[in-house]
Length: 120
Image (tube, rainbow, N blue to C red; front, side, top):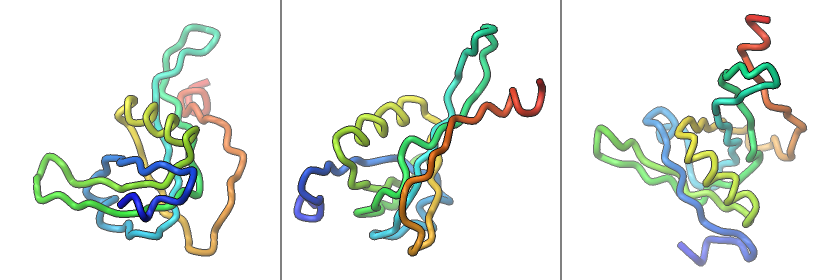
């Protein structure tokens, strides 16, 4: 596997849901979003979602035969992105979005707090 990791990058294993392992293939480009609890200035704790990783490459997809563990994707990440991935995994609410093969690049995406959008 280390031969597949581009110079300056790290291979990071990110657990996936069963649906995600079904659609991702090695070489796919992905966005990684994370939902986390966030407290605003009014001390209201509400879930927020942020996409800290965009347009990252899937090096490999590991599918599990266990019903509890659906598998994982191995991502090629630079050291900073690897830190963001580790933080995202600690939140335990990680989501993967598969990009179109011609859709490359990073878009500015501020965090979204659905609570504020729907209930304020």
